[in-house]
Every structure is written in structure tokens, then in C-alpha cells.
Image 1 (cartoon, one colour):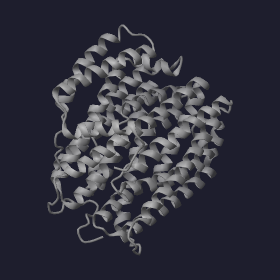
Image 2 (cartoon, one colour; image 1 turned 120 degrees about the horizontal axis):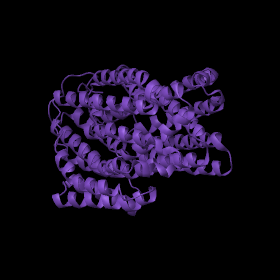
Image 3 (cartoon, one colour; image 1 turned 90 degrees about the vertical axis):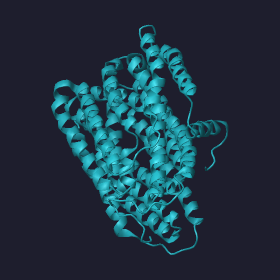
Image 4 (tube, helix red, strand yellow; image 1 turned 60 degrees about the vertical axis):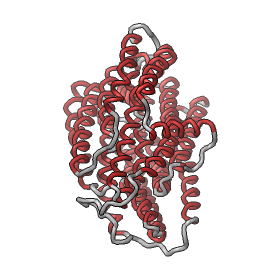
Length: 516
């Protein structure tokens, strides 16, 4: 890298230069539209997997699957962790500087390090599976933990390779492989396994197979991109990458721990049936914020690129656009959650209506998460990884303490309350920090979004007393809520970037994906 590279923890941006982010906002809109479409498929697949499991197996097996999946996500981040953000950031910076040797070195070092770590973690998990199953009070879980170990290596390869491709500021591979092929294949294989009566182990086996297919495809795509670079000897910028990766790794691990700590702690304090009911409630809420990750993934390489070039106005603009898209797209889903929690939980079969209060409580916290926008990514991509680490570690510690207090007394309701309190607190802190380092999100449109949502919320509140059952809520309540919201939003007028995002989604629906 040249001397303009920003080191982790830097307190100021380089001298301003750039075009105000106009080109990047346009590319982010196109990439974000592609990602949103992929996220719809991804979250829809995960939702259907949980629904099929809930209807085809016992509540206890749903809980056991959830425990294995939670452990897999945490261990994947343990082995991949900060290298995901490191690969995206340093690849984007190398391409911005046209230093193709640095790009090659970044990819080789990042991917190989992640894979090595995953092999070590998988070995430890295999050896320690009896102890882990005992801690989780599920002695029959050991075979599932072995499948988790096999899946872990594949997901690490897939995640690191796709993170590197995002450094090109393109979302094509990330979305097609990570959000469409992998979850889509997992859904198909899970349905076939359950249809053949293979139960929990069949569902976990489907997870492993789809992960390895995604890993192989990711390596193929990354290899093609690297071969297109100019011939240059790899340059290994190990110290800056490791400094960024270690802090980002701890920060990401804390974030993942926050997401899954309640599930694992419920597994310790409560029966597997309770874990299954709680997981169904959380999956319903997660579906409402499906847009958060795809917009954030499209946003990350652009903010890294613009900040590296010193284009402060461009950073403000892409941050504001990302924040606006997240809130505007997710608002109708939150209205549905608040109005029809019991009806929507009926999709999973009898007995899951007990998660209605969990759904409402979690929706409050996740709405705060969506409204704050990608503040954590801003801190990371501008080099404030230590600050982001402190935030995430504080949130994780607070969540664990609250879970220890609330879960034994209130069960799944206590776990939901704990997560919501922490989400509101940590997002408030991050938003204040982003403002204090001089980044002002431009054109978030929060007030206009809330005004546009008011008629839809009123209609939903009225319909909640009339409609009964999941199909009525989805087929009658859903179109009315979305229609009222979109009508008011269009009447107020849409920004140019918003129109481009919508146009991108519609184009993707009409034709096969192309790299923006």
C-alpha cells in the first residue's frame, strides 16, 4: 500500500478529494437492489426451513437444530471473524490504489489464514463434542456437533472468498452464491431429507452439503477475478491487516455472541422445547429486518473506498442513503409484526403462539437496530475498529448479565427483553460516536418514513381485531399495509437514489443477474 493508507484506529480522514459519492451511491443502489432480492430469497429459505422443521419434527428437535445452528454461526465467526471485513476493506483499498500485488497478497493471506483457523476450531469441536453436548443438557446432540464441525470449514471458505470479491464493489457473487444458491439448496435438501424421514440429522446434513457447494463455487469465482488482475508479485501487508483483523475479529465475535448468546443460555437453563419456541419467534423478527445485511454488504466497500480517498461528503451521502433504504424497506414488516404476531406464528403450527410476546419485544429492539443504520460498519471501515470492539464487548457483557438475571425468572420473555435492551443501548451509543467523529448521514428521511407509515399502522391496528389466522393476515392484511405505506411514500416523492434502488430490484426480477 502507499503512504495514504489509513491505519486502524485513525482519528482523522485523509485530505478531501472525490466526487461527493455520486458514482458510489449509484453503484450502491444497483448492488443494494441485487442484494435485497437475494436477501428475500435467503431469509425466505431460512424461514421455510424453520417452518418445515416445526411442522415435521418435535419442538425439541427444532430446539436442537437451533442450538447446532447457533453454535455453527459463532464458531464460523471465531475462525473467520475480522478477516471478512479485512478482506473487503484491504482489497477495496488495493484496487483504489491500483496496487494489484497488494490485492493478490491480501487475498492469499486472508483466505489461507481463515481456512487454517477453521480447521483448528473444527478439530477442537470434534474432540470436545461430548462435553459440549453435556453442557447444553442434550447428550444426543453429539452427532449434530460433528456435522457442525464439517460445515464450519465450508462456511469459512465461502465467507472469506465472497468477502474478497466484495472488494471489487460488486455484490454479484456475494448475493448469487451466499444468498441464493447456498440457502436455496439447503431448503431443497432439508425438505427432501424430512420427506424421506431422516429427521434432525437429515436437516443438519443438508446444511453441510449446501455449505460445501457454496464454498467450491466461491473459490471458483474469486479465482476468476484474481486472474483478471495485472501480473504482479503478491505484496503481503501483514502487520496492518493483522492489526485490523484481530480487533475486528473480537468485535465481530462479540456481535455474533450477542445474536446467539440468548439461544445458548436458554439451552442451558430451559428445555429444548422452549428453545424451539423462542427460535421461531426470533426467526419471524429476523425476517422483518432481512434488508439490513444486504444493504450493509453493498455499503461496506463503498464507504471504505470513499473514506480512503478522503471524500467525506461521499461518505455522508452513502451512509444516509443506506440508512434511508433500511428503514423504508423494513417498516411494513415491523407494522405486520406488531399487529399480527399471533396470526403469523400460526404458520409454524400449533403451540408456537406462546412466542407472540417474544416477537413483539424483539421487534422493538430490532426496529432500533434498523433505524440506527450501518453505524458499526462506518466505525470499522473508517478504522475505528477498537471503538467498535469496545461497543460490542460492552453489549455482549450486558446481554449475558441480563440473561443470567432474567432467563431463570422469566424464560423466553426474559431472553427477549435482555436482547432488546442491549440493542437499543448499543445502537444509541454507536450512532452518537459516528456523529462525533464528523460523519453526518445525509438525507436519512426518517421523519418522512414515519409519516408515510402512520396510515398503514392505523389500518393494521384495525385489521388485527378482524383477521384471524396466518393466511388472512398475509393475504389480506399484508397487501393493505404495504399498499397504504407505498401510496403515501410515493405521494411525498422519492429521492433519485431510491428510484434507482427500486429500478434495480425490478430489473433483477425481469432478467438474469449481471454484475453492476
